[in-house]
Length: 529
Ligand code: KIV
Ligand code: ZN
Image 1 (tube, rainbow, N blue to C red):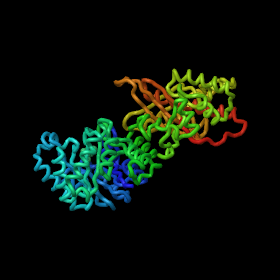
Image 2 (tube, rainbow, N blue to C red; image 1 turned 30 degrees about the vertical axis):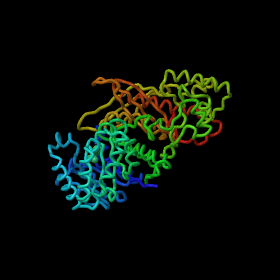
Image 3 (spheres, rainbow, N blue to C red; image 1 turned 120 degrees about the vertical axis):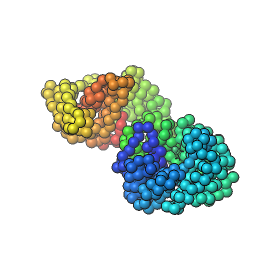
């Protein structure tokens, strides 16, 4: 098996994602997790671009000692000097030098001749070699660079001391066959390539970054540059989790492996998403919420009979419990039966058929069917209890905010006919309102309900846009309770979503108490409620 090095550039190219800015502390947290994940190289930043980038590289270099810590620089002396200074405390350090080599970049951006670019590349690599023996060189926009000129620059960079040559598809223009031919050409024309590490770096403008990276790897690249969740400039970079799991799942075909601990993938993905504020697309391969979920009845039945019927990777392989069976309008009786038996309800076949039909009807009008929707329907069928009751009702919310003082909020709720007031402060008005509501929940129902997720989206444009707030509470047994609300006011949307989630939780507890003669068996954690 070939050992492929994983070069993670989440903290450099990934952070170039529009809207994904990270502070120094957040970068260190991610770098530590990348270390646990087992990446070979962490590209920690581009120190000349900002003092924040400089400080992050410096801190990561001092604190994270197993992987190589890499710092990006143009060929300019001041860039290389900043990169080297930031890396001073590193145990294993690399300077990554780049200059553009495509005609359009040389003419229009650099305004340099081909000869000048070669000379500048040589100077840059030599300068970097004064600071470390580990120097990577990238001919930027390589996939649009003339093949023979690429060979000329690469040969010159190797002669100047580059120990890794990275081939960037900067604008995501490459297609797998062409990328593969380029790598094969380079290896044939530049014999020095066999003595250094050949690397690939693909962007995803055509959605081909992972395919192109794998094609380059098959053609001889030993290092793949990628990012968590595929973050990066424009459409992003090749996604680390997809590359690693493709290699893992098809290792016999690729005859290649990585040093990644796949069980850390999910955690890393969620950490990056949380800290960058960029959520993971629901149907994203490997780490999307739907990646291991089965909705169609035929699939659910197959998976229940044998998981491998419809799964090539299991959620646990990437360190996730996932949500295996999701109930929707395509689901069958087996999935409903599984959900209900998890909640300790045993219905006969006729009752199950009745519940399944009603669930399908509900799914026609409601996007997501929650487990407690199914339980409520079952209880209706069993004629034991009414569906979700509005046990908590929001009466008032008031928020004080502005610059120069701590935002504070007061909420008034009606609980079983009684008015209950909660107060809280926070970093912003929504945070303050959340704390005020949580104080009521804690006071009335104990400390067991925790706010695990919060998300806010503008549905329409403009300052009067409708806001959609989505939250998830979790109890001590890891049952989770979703809430969602739409309102013109983001605070109202947030509080109403939390009230909905709290109502679900309280109803669930009430039903569980009245249903279970014996105390409920411990349940696996799940996200479906
Ligand atoms: O995409 C690109 O060309 C880059 C280089 C700096 C390697 O990110
Ligand atoms: Zn890039």
